[in-house]
Length: 169
Image (tube, rainbow, N blue to C red; front, side):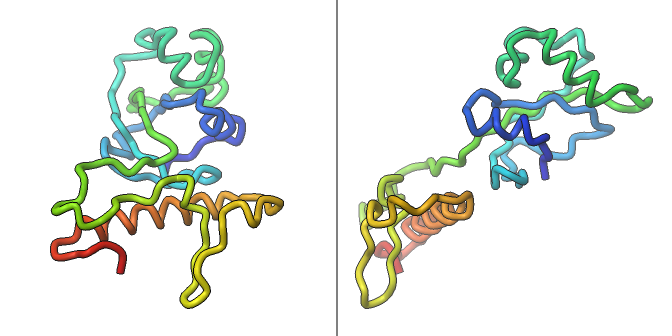
């Protein structure tokens, strides 16, 4: 699990934060891992890199971390880590949010592939057909709906890639 403060979650949602700087004894997350973050749901860890110290942080790190400049990033880090205990190491964790389904197309062209984002909020129930996505336009979309959409996309993708599959089951 990768925890972020609420004001940093807002930066991720706005697309301004793509990495975080952490002080750990050892890496807690690893490249390629899917991690859960409260307020965001699942995100993919792209890379985890150990840095020699705070001096190694650059302006590019500050921008990728959602800050205007290096001084603002360092101020936030010093606020979060006022005392650095011995044995702690500095890590740059780059992540991807929201998750995107990527990969090669399904073999034999048997499946239409992942559900397009425009279709992902449609609800279906056996025997009733589907409710158009705009039918509930007045309804507020919650984080749960987005997470269910991501799960549906991933499920469809996995089912399409299964050997001997002819598409959705």
